[in-house]
Amino acid sequence: MMKIVIADDHAIVRSGFAMILNFQPDMEVVGTAADGIEAYTMVAKHGPDILLMDLSMPPGESGLIATGKIKEDYPDTRILILTMHDDEEYLFHVLRNGASGYVLKNAPDEELLLAIRTIHEGGTYIHPKLATSLVREFVKTNTSADSEDVYEVLSRRELEILPLVAKGYSNKDVAEKLFISVKTVEAHKAKIMEKLNLKSRPELVEYALRKKILDF
Image (cartoon, rainbow, N blue to C red):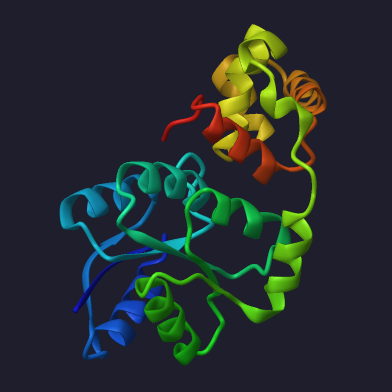
């Protein structure tokens, strides 16, 4: 019997998935969570075989951030990412951060069940239409900034802004937290991306996780 935890910020989605999974003879939902912090707590408490993780949850508690932390501390739990968005940009990063699969929320029930059973048996499941994107992203060269010492590359203010941006806070939220203007945040953020040779927020999140300067 597979033990499963469901993490999604919508209660009706959690209930719907739980109903589908509990109906299966080889699956049991042992816990649910509304954000990344709760997901971590549920995994620590139940030690599930599978964690269904929504990719987009509230700022500071996103599925991308939680995936890296959970996989590091509980490597035996296999993580299946659930999302409404067939976002090619995020796919490669969630897999590199420890996820074993990536399924769209609008996929048929049969595909979700197949994905769960596939990763439970040690495989990786990727929605077919996203497989080509994964290969294309994989062959890209890594950023040259990855070998740099982040504490030497970035200024003190940039080091304050980086984890907040990676966690998903808006420019306005960051400005309010640090008591600076939105324009100042935008300027620092652009400088961070330039210095680290990063092209997107998923790359920034992955960088912050690798450098261990991001927690949740």
